[in-house]
Image 1 (spheres, rainbow, N blue to C red):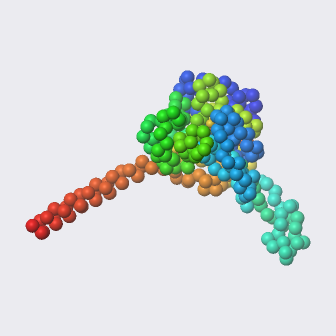
Image 2: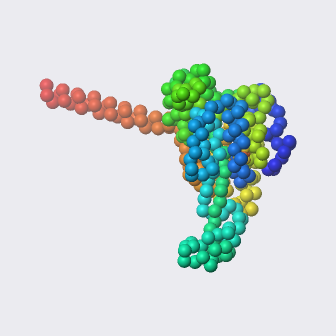
Length: 301
Ligand code: SF4
Ligand code: SF4
Ligand code: SF4
C-alpha cells in the first residue's frame, strides 16, 4: 500500500471537485523522512511569504508551528523511546557515564531514542470552529468538504483565530503582503479544480502524505495501523476525533504515542458547544436581577 509510485492517487488527475467527492489527506509519520519538500512546495505554489527565517537552535525544526505564512509544518519530535522494533543498545550510553564508562556501547547500556517527523496542516474539520465564527462569510465549505478562506472577503476581525481548536489559522502580521487578513491551507482548491493533486502530496517522496477520497483513506489508515502494530509499533493509532463536536477531520494522522506529544488536543471541541450553557447562565442572571430589583422596590416603597 505504501509506495505505490505512479499508481498512487498522489500522481493521478481527478475530477473530485466536479463530482463533489469528499477528499482528505492521510499523513503517516512512520514513513516521513523529514525532508520538508511538502513545506517548500506549499510555499512555492501558493506564493506564501517567508516567516522570518528564525533559527530556533533547539532542533532541525526551525519552522516551529503552523501560522498565517506556514500552511505546512514538519514537526521533529525527539523522544526517549524506541521506534517499533528499533535496536537501541549498541550505541547507547549508561545512565551515569561518569561512574560506569565500561558499559558504553554494551547491549545493557540501552538509551532508547527516536525521531518522529509529522507533517502538520489545517485539519479541514467536519464541523469547523473557524467557519462557524466567521461573521463575513469569508470562510466556506467547498464541494470536496475542505474549508476555504476567501481572502478578498475577510475583514481581519480574528474571530476564526480564537475559534480554531487546533491553533491553525492566524492573521498575517505587517509588513507582509496582505497583512491583517486570516490565512491557512487552502487544500490547494485552485489545483483541485483543475484535476491536480495538492502540491504538498504531489511532491512527498515517500507518500507519507496521501491525498484521495476520504472514505478510501480512512480504510487505508486503519489497515496501516494494524500493519504497524503487527510489526512492533504498539503505540500506533489514528488521530481523527470523530467522537467530539469536531465530528472528524479531513486531514487525519497516524500517530505514534499520545496526541499531546504532537500538540494535538485529545478531545478538540468547537467553541459554539459552550454557547448553550453561556446563554442559560446569562438568562438566569437576568431573571435574578429583575427579582432583586422588584423586591427592593417592594421593600423600600
Ligand atoms: S483546523 Fe482550525 S482552521 Fe482548519 S478547518 Fe479546523 S477550525 Fe478551521
Ligand atoms: S494542500 Fe496546498 S495549501 Fe494546503 S498545505 Fe498542501 S500545498 Fe499547502
Ligand atoms: S511528509 Fe513527505 S515531503 Fe513532507 S517531510 Fe515527510 S517525507 Fe518529506
